[in-house]
Structure formats: C-alpha cells, structure tokens
Length: 140
Image 1 (cartoon, rainbow, N blue to C red):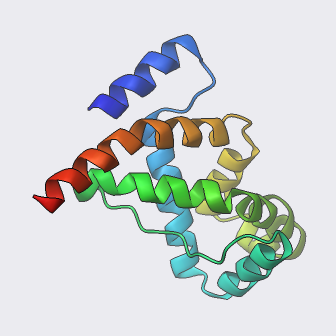
Image 2 (spheres, one colour; image 1 turned 180 degrees about the vertical axis):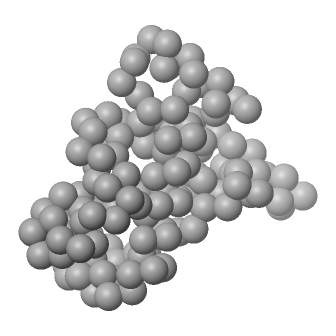
C-alpha cells in the first residue's frame, strides 16, 4: 500500500513514471517470456557476457508475496542493459516472428520508454525499506 501511494504521489508530480501495475506486468512478462522461449536464454547469456554483467536469471514475481518484487526489480535493473539489447535490437533484427507476439511487443514498448528504468530505480529505493522490515521480522 505504501509503495502504491508513493508511486501515485510521484505520478501526480512526474507524469512520466509508470504506475506500479505497469511495472508488475512488465516483470511478469519478462519472466514468462524466458520460461516460454528457453532458446533465448543462451542469447541472453551471451549478451550478459558482452556487457560484462553478472549472469543471473530473472526472478519470478508472485503477487501473493508482494514483497518479493524488490528482488525482481533489483534483478531487472541489474540486467537492464542486456534486456534492452535483446528486446530492442536482437529480437527485431533476427526473430521477426517472435517480435510480433503480444508479450514481446509489450516488453519492447516498456523498454523503449525512457522512464521505465527510472521507475524501476524509484521502486527499488522505496521497496528497500520493506525488504529491511521483512528481514527483521523473519529473524524474530
């Protein structure tokens, strides 16, 4: 609720930020894409090598455990450069059938938008408080 309130507050002042639901759909689309298109995992891995990014897979987000989105968002930020290369250059250039799929078009639209990465950073900043809170109560 706090996160949604923060995003709505920013949305009124900075019209370019995405709503929480948009980012939620985006991260779910990313995870689903790689689970349905396993062959792109190798291409993604090569892109991670190219950009000298630590090889991590994307994490699945579950609405039931809403606090899990922090790790998902952080992982998306970490892998953003290779994701952008994959969805904006590699897929359109070499995989025209895949490019036409609805999920891929949604991901591509989000990757093209200049404020997707700033929104992810804002969410990571806001969610970090809850991550600390959650870890504290898990210890007790």
